[in-house]
Image 1 (cartoon, rainbow, N blue to C red):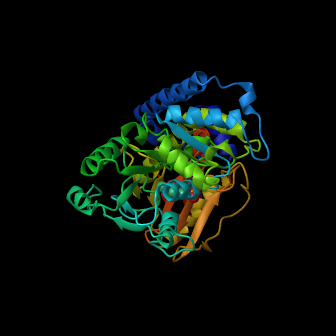
Image 2 (image 1 turned 90 degrees about the horizontal axis):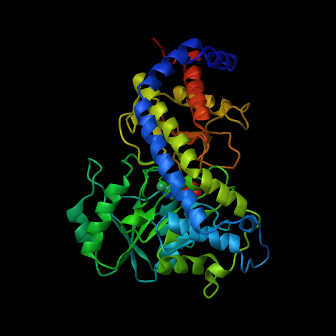
Image 3 (image 1 turned 60 degrees about the vertical axis):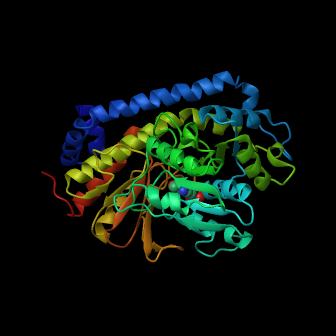
Length: 429
Ligand SMILES: *Cc1c(COP(=O)(O)O)cnc(C)c1O
């Protein structure tokens, strides 16, 4: 680190000790960073070509109001998504309120009463449990006569193939595979692993629909699950594919049939994709998608750096620093509530927005304990932006993700370490 950089870190409250310690960690990561940059390069050209091949033009960046008929900007963006995901069609809309909403449209649109939804990878993401009716909620799929079955992962986190074969039955209509572990204790799956699982499932039941919950996974690798037999990939635009620029929205990329079915739920049967004013988001959806490969790379570098720093300090980190990344989430077991809070304070104070606020633990619906959150983001709740949260229960894990730029991610992690050092909770050599 040169003296200029040291000086600006010093002026920002980062001590010489923290700088040196973090420099050492970084030195060990240069090969990994080069590989992340290569993937970003590949994905950048993939995204760029999809825009070039679809003749994206200035006029597509405009807006529509009212019903939104003939919004060529919106329709062309959906073609761009379809090309990137190698699918027949896509639905990319501001009216999709969140990742959970996108997943709900994909499920509710493609399941009918009497059908069974099946997860071969254990319990789905927390919010999906309410959607499915695993946890009773008003309007769940269970209320509409859709049953649910799951097969848990084996203790080592791998797929239980014999049990999966057993579980798939006459009623199995749609198989849901969650790529990222989210906030669960299991591993995230590489696209290669997902491809293996899909091939197995389609051999057991040809014609079954496979949906991948792609949240946090987009652009982490060079290929997406729809290139390997998934009928749909579904996600949120305030995560990876929005590049930190999209202010809201979600997407479903998949077969024409699956996308039309989801669109009939988003708007109405008979109306489908034809409706939906873009309300000024077209430009930011395109621009965010354009940035998404390098923004995702920044988030992966930040996660890897965090793993390296905290692993070197003796904390258990998931995934371990040496592990290949399948998503942008990093978990750090901080072992005490005080350390978890200091970590979050560091992330918050390193934020571009609300840096002066101090995060405090708070009771959150759906958790059995208080949760502390650090997020100084441009878009509310955006988790492609540097953010952390942790339930206040052992082992006091900080789930941490995002970083629109690598220098910001690096600064956030250094600040978290500085807070822990200042509070006397860690010692540096
Ligand atoms: C974030 C996430 C969701 C839900 O997205 P929201 O935008 O928070 O509704 C679903 N599945 C996974 C794996 C996620 O990471």
